[in-house]
Image 1 (spheres, one colour):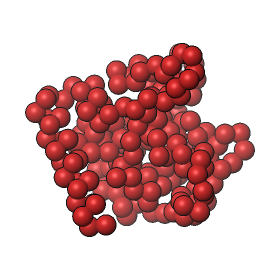
Image 2 (image 1 turned 45 degrees about the horizontal axis):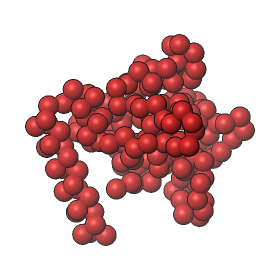
Image 3 (image 1 turned 90 degrees about the vertical axis):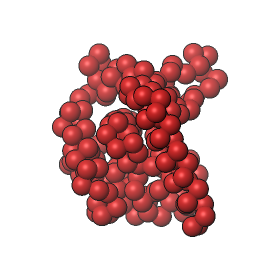
Length: 186
């Protein structure tokens, strides 16, 4: 289940590494890549988000909605307290929520993603969009433009990462157990 506090902390950490602001599409790509690496190394995402294929590559869907404020902003007090919309399709860090909700290994993954991809341009043949288009789990959305996003399942990402059937089954079982526990404890 999506944890706004954790997703906000992840975005805030990326913005902090970037000097306080960044184009929203770049943030989305970096969040996706951090989640993907975390899935590969730990069998779980950092953002707790779900993912979709869109025109410009894979995107964490709930984080996308937070950035675009597609529903009532009052529903997202944590995000609004720490992240702000800026001109020129950018977002900025209003206040640092801290990293207490993330593990040391998650912080290392974010740092690694920043070091490897943070300085890439968004567009161009060597940019983040081109790179994320090369990922096997990304599917080109409807060329007619009728469907803007299609879901990317956890299982598809794990398969694209080269996980064995046994590893995928184990991670999927843990995910289902975690979701069940959250519902019971809610």
